[in-house]
Image (cartoon, rainbow, N blue to C red; front, top):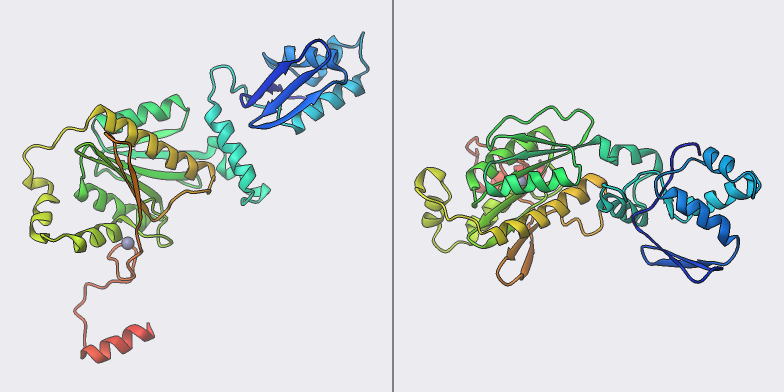
Length: 324
Ligand SMILES: [Zn+2]
């Protein structure tokens, strides 16, 4: 325990008179009435980061080193002291995510390094106000980000925990479908964010071959449209002269929703991750509608569709399908 320890950004510490300290870490509260003077000195120094050796040295006149070590160990175990200095200039978001992931406890300890922020890579595809706002938000939270153009090639992700986020100021079906096809082929998880007038459309979060992909979503939506021909015309970018501009408010809702999903996926906080879910947020009323997207078994991207003409009679085809 010779690295620097800091007071956790999730900890609230209150002194109750001279002989009592109350500590709360995300809602877990306990009071200490024992060795309050020593604790106050430790906490005071930990504000700027402190090492155990420096502590025992500076307090050697008043307290034995074992007592100081025991107190520091207790503070680390209760998460009052942590290894990152997220209180000064850092971001409490990552500490909250880590805390949630530990509550989930679904990831084995030896695999946790893969979910570490140093191993993340967020690939942001797209241009426009929404993409710029997302990039800025991610930079503020120190998320490693690489931008590519809206139909650009995907970068090598190696063994990084990577997510492709495709973002557009309008419902850019063509780009979303093209990037989805690339991501599914590469086995890269992806998320889609578009704005339709003042409504945010976010999703689905795609885990290739495991959940519904954007192509599955697109075909489901197309089949529910009453005027399919009109839908087809509107979904081709070459037919549109001007797009409606996204409102600033819609962008802010979109950035919030997409950042949440991206951070949850990257950090491995799987609670309510909502893969295979499509969310629509009306930015003017705040109303959020989530619908489940089912995977299409014969999807052209993630399913077993074939472009070859089927052979045999309808009856023979159904037999072949059943055998496959
Ligand atoms: Zn699919």
